[in-house]
Every structure is written in C-alpha cells, then in structure tokens.
Length: 610
Ligand code: ADP
Ligand code: MG
Image 1 (spheres, protein in one colour):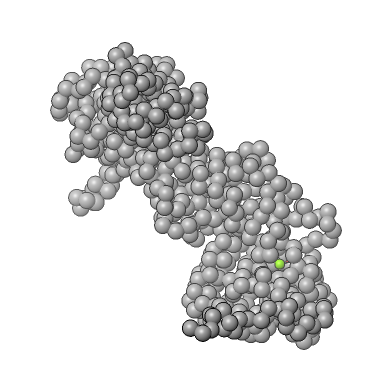
Image 2 (cartoon, rainbow, N blue to C red; image 1 turned 90 degrees about the horizontal axis):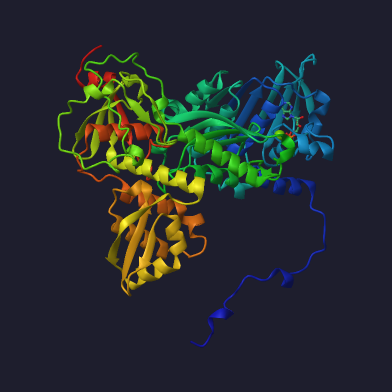
C-alpha cells in the first residue's frame, strides 16, 4: 500500500482546462438546447402539434405514426391554416400568432404561446409544413431545413410532418424506449386531448393501421369511449361552483380506486395539467374513504378566469400557477368531497316500481335510536324470524337523527327507502334487506362504523368537540405510567373527544364521561385506545392534525361487533342511518359498506330468463 487511493486520475476541473473566450452560442445550438426542454419523446411532439391544431380551430385531427413516432409523425387538421407568406415565421423561435403584447400574457385562452414548439421540432427532426387558409387558392409547403417554399395540393387546414426525431442528437435518441412504449405515450397524449375536446374528432394510425378513433360527440359519450364503461359505472358526475372557480367532472368511487395514479385527469381552462396543488386537494377529499396506497380516479374540468392562472410557467406547459393557491385547493377539495358524499343509493332504480310480495313490515325506531344501532337500545331478544311488527307500521313516526325532530313517514312505502327493509342477519356479519331493485347486503360493522364516524365528525365540526355524556358511576381501570401521563398532559384534548379521565391514585384512572354516540362501546378499551394514539402525537395541535384518525379509532370501538344478534328494528335503524349519512357507502378503510344484488342478477344466477 504505497499509493494513497486518491491519486488515481480524477476528472479535470473545468477551471484548470484551457479556457476559451466567451462566445454567443450559434443559433442552431440554442435551438437544440431549447428543444430539449420541450421535446422529450415523440409524444411531446404529438402534444405540441395537436395543441396547435386545436388553437387553429380544428374539428378533426388525425395523427399518423411510424415506429412509435420516432420515424415519422404526421398530423393533419382542418383548422384555419397558416398563410403561405407566414410559414417561414412560424418556424422561427419566439414566433407566435397568439400574443402580441405583455399585457395579453394574462389573458391568453389558447393552449400556449411560447412560440417555440415548431422551432424546437425543426431543430431536432426533419420538419415540413403544408398549409392552406380559407382564402388561399392553393396550399403552400415549407421545408424547415432548406426554408424552401413551394405550392402544394391540400384542402383547407394544416399538415405537419416530422421525421427522424433526434436524428441530429443521437444521445437523446438513445433515451427513447421501444416503439410500443413510445406509441403508448402518444396514445395517452391523445387521450388527454380527447377528454378535453369531445367536440373534436381524433384518429390515430400506427404503421398504416387505425389504432383508435373518437368521433365528435358529447362529453359523457367521449368520457365513456376514452375511459370505458367501467369508469362510468364506478364514478359520479358533478358540477360545482365556488367563488370564481367552476369545477365539473367525474369522481371515481373509493372502492374503484386503483393501484396506480393512471386515471387522474385535470384540465384548467381546457388544458391538461399535472398540478400538485390540485392533486393534493383531490387526495384530501378521499382521505377518509381511501386506503393509503390506493389511487383515486377522477376527471376534473376547472374553469377560472385566465388572469387568475399562469399557464406558461413551464416549458411543456403542463404545470400552472394559481394566483390564489389556497382558494384553488379548497375548491377542488370541496367539489370532490361533496360529489363523494352523495349516497350511492340515490341512483335511480332500473327495474321499475317495487311490488311487495309480503306486507311491508318496516317499523322505525322512534325511541332512543338517536345514537343509532344498538346504542341506547336494550340488548335485543333473540327473535327470529321477524314477526308482529305489522301492527306498528300504520302510523309510523320517524325521528330525524340530524335535527332530533320527528316527522311522519310514509307507512307502506318500501320504495322510499333506498336501502330497503331489513329481512335477516347472515353469518353474524351481514344484514340482508330488500329494496325495489332486489337484495341489499350490508356489512353491518363497517356500515355502523361509518355512521358513527360521520356523527362524531359532524359534532366536532359543529361545536369543536364531541358531544359527551357523563357517566353516573365513573368507570375505574388500572393504567400504566404512560397512560397516566397522557391522561394528564392531554386532559383538554381528551375532554374535547368526549372522554373525561381523572387520576385515581398513582396507577388508576376514572372515566367520567364518554362520547354520546358511543354508549354501547367497551368504554375502557375505547379510552385505552385513544390514550395510546394520543401518546404517539405531539401534545399541541393534536386535534388539528390527528382528528380524523382519532375519531376513526373511536368509531371502530363504538361500532357494533360481529356476531351480535340484531333485531329487525335495529337492522332497519341501521339502514335508515346509512341513508342519512354522508359517505355511508364506504367504511373508513375504503371498503364498500353495502352491495346491491339486483333481481336481474338473481335471475341470472338461477338461469331464469325474464
Ligand atoms: P405557439 O403555438 O406557441 O404560438 P408554435 O411554434 O407551436 O408556437 O407555432 C407557431 C405559430 O405557427 C403559431 O402561433 C400559429 O400561428 C402557427 N401554427 C402552428 N401550427 C398551426 C396549425 N396547425 N394551424 C394553424 N396555425 C399554426
Ligand atoms: Mg404551439
């Protein structure tokens, strides 16, 4: 070991190499460098050229590719065209017809106006444009390399031909993936455009074969064509306006969430964007109903006055900047949240009016059902099959759990109840009910947990604390030193969660109140779970940051356990509670709380033609 390792040859620092005089970069090199920012792969070319076609008012756009777009990209449109004399200008850097002054920068409603796409493409590929305006007697073609103009034959509109992408920059060409992968990227780009512009027809050919074609149509039809019937069925449309922001679109239901974030489409003023602020706003809206790793699907069309958003902050124009980021975040979050909150049961029935086969035996629970299933209701007698409820159904009175007021309920009207009337309990875990469409199967623990959770959240939102109920006889229990410490340090937070805990000597606690919504829970287990969770957080601010987790823990403890036998009244109370509860369709972990099995599906099961 005579030579220290660091004497082996290292790269020579620039300062020690021979210094060369400062020079302006040649134009061609500038263009190539700039091109690198805009054009990463064939799909970037497709995006820029389709942007241009749409800006030119095209109603039909066709894209022909060869070798995934690396060998050739030919895009034709029926837009306004470029006057022959302006063709040389269109190819120059910072040449655009879309903005004339700085003042206009704020109000541009086009796809972008950086004026560099064609120049960039021309710098890294063979480029030719053939175009004809409405008033031109013939088309004109320009070859970007030679700059030569020649008359050509073409109907109105523009054809842009791009060949041998990156032919002059082989290093970049090496980064390209297989033709199939590049083609897939191009398809995704077209998909994004197609979802933004149902009023424009798109077609894509690869190696002379038609790969996809979307004709001009309505937005709903286009979404269905592009994202599939499956997405339509598992998503919900909405249209929300708040402040100066309008957001419409579709949100995927939590149980249709995906492993990858590959179905999240966001448009700002008609332009596809990928924006972290918006993505975060949407994600937050799903936080209660989605399992951590799952990715929601959504399609958001955001309209905002152009002066409140800057779309030109990024070379590929895929990122935007909002003047009021907070407002945008809130608007997205609320729009998605509200759309998700609509009960799924509101879907119209497919099978027509319900014909009861037996007398309706719905018997609501006016007494003490405020806290929902089994809470404040005496332990039910094991009573099955259900009977003797008919008498009560004549003058049924319904207690509105939200207002505490009673109002008359339509007696024999199972149709009024989207989740139907309870029939039976199955396997200690499921409630079976009959509604106008057929059979409803409810996961009783998951559903009840959701109902309780939303109730806790609602009282937290209304009064900044969970409604508490004092215990006439305090519950005392042995506590660890950690539990003792947490109970003392977080007494205020615990109280806001409806739990009043006081020390009883050095190693015991007394529980003096409990959340009103959780009368039926194992209260000691509940208190211990909340103490354990609180210990994991920082004392201050815990309620702001961990509120939902804490309430979820409490709801889980408060929800009816498996194997608990329910009376028909309790089952019905649960169904009614679910109908009244926002987001009742999913449990706190994003699993469905109920499923519908339609009569038609049952017929199919039994091979019965109807
Ligand atoms: P930008 O789109 O930012 O203006 P481009 O380099 O993409 O810059 O295009 C330069 C100009 O060429 C555009 O402003 C437009 O006037 C014209 N142009 C490009 N493509 C088309 C097209 N398909 N139809 C009509 N005009 C076009
Ligand atoms: Mg452009």
